[in-house]
Length: 378
Ligand SMILES: Cc1ncc(COP(=O)(O)O)c(C=O)c1O
Image 1 (cartoon, rainbow, N blue to C red):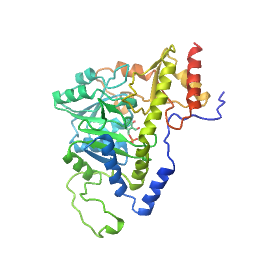
Image 2: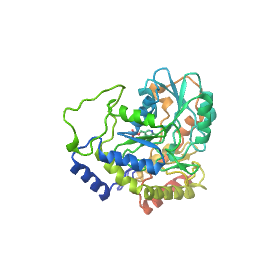
Image 3: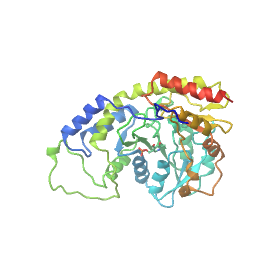
Image 4: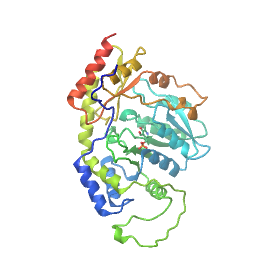
């Protein structure tokens, strides 16, 4: 019987007075659409990531859709993407009219398997979309070489990987387009938000136009500068994907805390790894936390015990998750292609344990104690 008094959440954002102060400034400014704080957030993100261009959006899903659309992806095209990702990656591809082609993952990292991805390339393939699952960087050197060999675009789903690096450079400074999410539980949050980082000025400009219905105009320096009855011209398909000044205000305050947040997240993951490494039936993912800014902590639970552990933790007041139901198992994305054995095996074993900066040291100890106690029961 459930005896829960306190629930330790699996994920949550951490907002404070700094975010309130930034939002108060946005209120005082009086215009809540695309305005000065969005532009400042984009500049600061570009500096942080080492990216040439950053285009902020209202969600990570819209960032993915916007990038694919601006790269000219549409009907008749295939995009190869790991099945083990949030459904947002698949829906963003489908929104362009293209077909998501699910591929398998390596068992030890659950990152895109490059050999499997290559085996799925056909003349219809236009894009490789790796997912930096849990925040761990994919093999971008190998992916870049594969994309170049077949003339494909590389669009990274970096929703989990804000702050992660690969070979000493931040994720966001590689690839044709790298898409981030700043939804409420990500490494940093805007409340809701996203961004595309890219190196190509023309692509960035096209995305800026497309995110506001194809309208080409700069934001006003202040509300009083808005010319009344302004006319404009539209020459491209566009969407309503811009980030609001209020969400950017939250993001600016969060960005100042990003390194502290990431340090605490890494510390918790390393503590989990140390505690679970010798425990029979538990297999942590192979993650290098020197380069990973972890968004979630995923462990594999062997011998068919995952669901029982999940239930036990729930009764002990510890929320967990399963990231994710593989997309090729959803009715919408069922496919008759090559099987995905590693993904399906992982689906039966993965468990996401709590990871956020609101966890206290005693929360982390309690989670470890409960998990280890359950596994040792045999
Ligand atoms: C892997 C992945 N891709 C894309 C997204 C979409 O981001 P958003 O929720 O900001 O639309 C998420 C968000 O959870 C995600 O985890």
